[in-house]
Image (cartoon, rainbow over all chains, first blue to last red; front, side, top):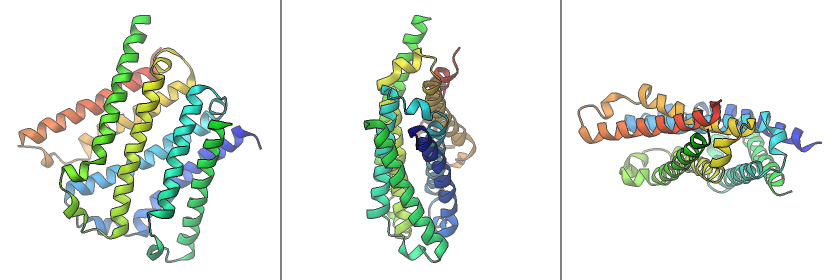
Length: 134
Length: 141
């Protein structure tokens, strides 16, 4: 498969991650838990949440619509790929070593979602690293 | 035109420096504002999500800052669609943050307190300024 197509798949997968992130509040009863916080911190939590989503859409959109430019090997494209690879590598490390989501993986759907998102983190880290350093 | 590009390059590098500062500040927000006790009320996973979101927002800002600092000249001078899209994406990010500062955060957080009002205005100016610089780079003719 061509690198451009692999990058476009990566771009589209960001949408999937954004959707999966959108299901998180319901899965972990987020609203209920956040009710214990003062309003300012609660709002800040939602602002972080929104901007992580926006970041995913931005990374995904750039990758999907500019896959040929990203695969071109130009300095700007390589630098962006290095940063995206770092971002997803760190996200993978957090998923594996920081979060303990076991109590929340209450049904097969959530378990499947957890393993699929981890697989997507690996794919994105690998495809961006390969694009950057090939 | 050359002078305009040079000026935009300098504005972009200033934007990069500001984003670096915001990224670092964001990492220490909980400590600076003494939120440890409030966050301790949350279940462990939710607390970790808050912390990880905060790290990744800072990481994203570091990416914006580094890319902008290194490629400010290209962002200001070329008409390359990829470069413009990158500037547009960062501009939309900050434009959205600017709008949220108005419509999402309650005025009760700052109204009647001079120090908080000044911080609110400084944030508005920063977010609006960052959006303006990047959107100019993205949509200039």
